[in-house]
Length: 254
Image (cartoon, rainbow, N blue to C red; front, side, top):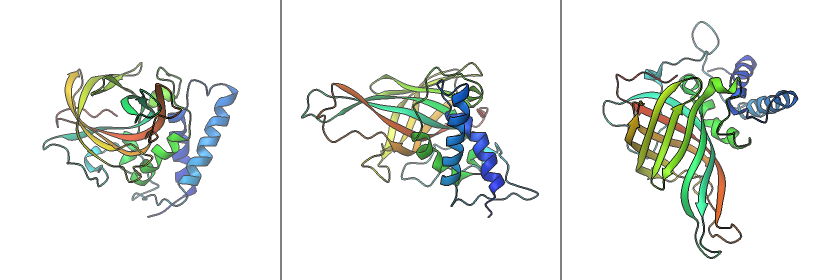
């Protein structure tokens, strides 16, 4: 195991466009990306990057060897294969009936960014990304700014209170859509501030092969204990990893 300044610099340069937004253009773009690279390097200072035989670590999309973190959720169903991994950055949404009530979840909205090729060679760095993403402004859902669009997986939202929906159709690709239902949940390690980790199963697909989705390594998203001072509707910033599983004959979305 080895950590090199070159590895950090390369990864920072590779990942910095991921969280660029429609507002980070022209003269502001360099400032935003420079800030990201600094934060990424600081966050990576204690991470060991595996060095591959024959040279420095390089990104790969060999999903057959990519492993999800150990989690207190049921494993993917027999026969499914990992096809995509994304970082979601957005908000968890809540409603209140009065100041004394407990906030009620009313869905979520997030932009999804493709980190599929990062997960295999750099699992430790992947685990840092939700926390890093949370430090940046919420991306515009319709953002297609170059080069960020190259890393855009799609968008996540709810079609009703019980149907988390993933739309993978963008200007760069058409991977279809999938509506899901919650299959299992477990508390995040820091459950006071971070929304639960989930396993979702598909219930309606259109041009999409995804059968199961995991939301892991969540950061943020939990509401306050009561609605006092929150108004009838409010949002809480969050970020998370999303792992997508499909039938084994399905193509990988990389």
